[in-house]
Length: 205
Image 1 (cartoon, rainbow, N blue to C red):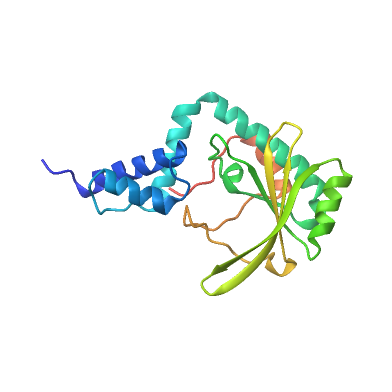
Image 2: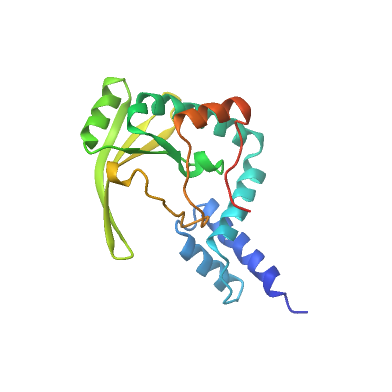
C-alpha cells in the first residue's frame, strides 16, 4: 500500500529534524533535501513542519531538564536585558520561542547607532565579551549590516547580542523558520512571563 502524501511529508519532516538535532546537517534546506532522498521522495515539508518535529525530538530526548534550562536561560537573558534597557532590548530566537535544544544560545536584539557603546557598557558591568564582528547579509536585493557581540553568562550560557540601527526599531521581521512575525519579548514582558508562565512557548500552530 502506498504511503499517503501527508504521511510521507510527516516522515520526511521527522527525518530532517533528526538530522538537525543530532548535527548531521546545519541548514533546514539541506536537511529536508537529504531526508527526502533517504526516503525516496520528492516531497519537501515546510520549515515550520520540520521545526515542530525538531521541538518534539528535543522534548523527548531532553525531558524535564529542558524546561529547567529554558527558565534559567530566560532568567540570564533578563539580567543582560536590564543592563541594556535604555536600548530597547528584545529577546528573540529559541529562548523567546521556548524551543531550545542542546547547544542553543541566548539571542538578544538591541537598537543603537554606536555598537561599540553597547559592548563597552557590557564590559563595564563585568560581562565577558569574547568577540565582536560586523556581518552583512543581502535579502531580496536589500543589504543589511548588523554588529554582533558574543558573550557568556555567569551560568556559562552562550549569548549573542545583535546591534541594529535605531531606524529598524519598528520594522517587522518575518521568521524564515516558523513563518510568523518575530515579536520577541521586552524586559518587562519577559519579567511578567517568568512570574506567570516561565516555560510558555511562542510558536504558531
